[in-house]
Amino acid sequence: MNIIFMGPPGAGKGTQSDFIIEKYQIPHIATGDMFRAAIKNETKLGLEAKSYMDAGKLVPDEVTINIVKERLLEDDTKNGFIFDGFPRTIVQAQALDKMLKELNRDIDVVINIDVPFDVLLKRLSGRRICKVCGTSYHLEFNPPQVAGICDKCGGELYTRSDDNEESARVRLETYTNETKPLIEYYLNRGLLNEVNGLQAVDKVFIDINNIIEGIK
Ligand code: AP5
Ligand code: MG
Ligand code: ZN
Image 1 (cartoon, rainbow, N blue to C red):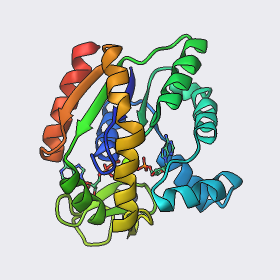
Image 2: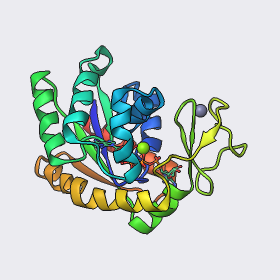
Image 3: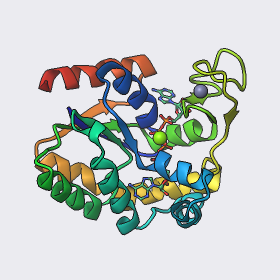
């Protein structure tokens, strides 16, 4: 099963991906997580990506497409994958089509998690993430059992450097201008499914799971 999760910043792509990878045992390819790992490891890629990310802008297409290309060549993607946060521009979507064609694979389903912007700003400002395993929490909507500590691994929770109000606003603007047009791109290809991301986390998962089971 080859899945793309789309949706604006804070829609719940990462949260829902955690459920999917556990249930279907497929790798989670999240370009944002890959860039954050590179920043942590102080690699050349990390240095390049950081200024764009902190400003809420997109990392250049060429850089992003190259890391995805390398990742798709790894063996664990052969039985399926879930893309979270990629593609984010028409150029990236076209590059992905080309990569998959060369590998004789195809996208099975695109799931767009829809949430209005006023709710997204609240979700981003209250988000906390585990330093160790990357699980997302929310101070109000999805709190950990013990404040500041990850339920899954006991890791310390932190706030992403691009979750401040200024960067979050730019991210939402960037989404509208550069990523939203992809909804039509995948609609035209008959792959798009919409999910109401305003529902509770477990309800959103039920809807996503029904879509996936429906196309299996
Ligand atoms: P990335 O890491 O992909 O961030 P994003 O798209 O801005 O999305 P988020 O991770 O913020 O949101 P999410 O949908 O995963 O929400 P989550 O589940 O955490 O990208 C970061 C940056 O990297 C980009 O700005 C860009 O610079 C760069 N980048 C990445 N990919 C790129 C690409 N392809 N090209 C170029 N640049 C790229 O949930 C959010 C919060 O809400 C959490 O607190 C969660 O607990 C809560 N929540 C989730 N679901 C619900 C619910 N149903 N009800 C209530 N609360 C909920
Ligand atoms: Mg995410
Ligand atoms: Zn953790």
